[in-house]
Length: 173
Image (tube, rainbow, N blue to C red; front, side, top):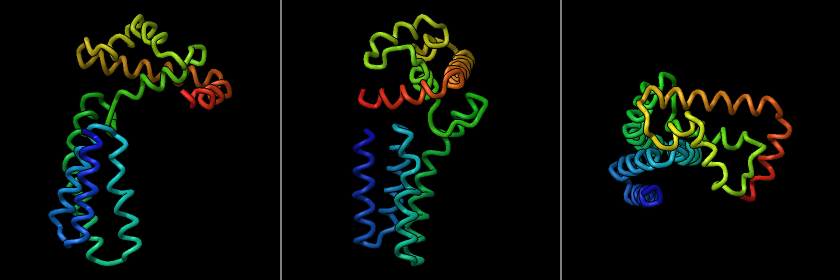
């Protein structure tokens, strides 16, 4: 879905440039907004794609096209950001699942080559079970996310050099 939305958005931008169509830029923005709900990294795409366009072309038309695309992208993204932030009680740009990934990466004592070894360990922890299974109420899920995030930060602070070296080593996996 992410790739389909992103590809369609790029095609819409090309069509918008060729036909001078604000509707195509609106469609591109909506598609980029949809892509950002699938993968949070896409949230910055409208800004990354259209700011250089405006800077390079330096016309009112380019500014208008970029503004339409960004605004339509935000029409999709902002409600999701608000929902996630209200649910957790703190600002969450697009996703709240990153705490688990941070925690896994902070465990320098775990073999990062084989995720089959550390998922059972995560499931044995209440917070890990809650996040991975989703078998908890929203409050407990938010608490688990906060708890595991704090533990990850503690692990990194405990030995930052070892953690940094483990990230370099784990890149190949």
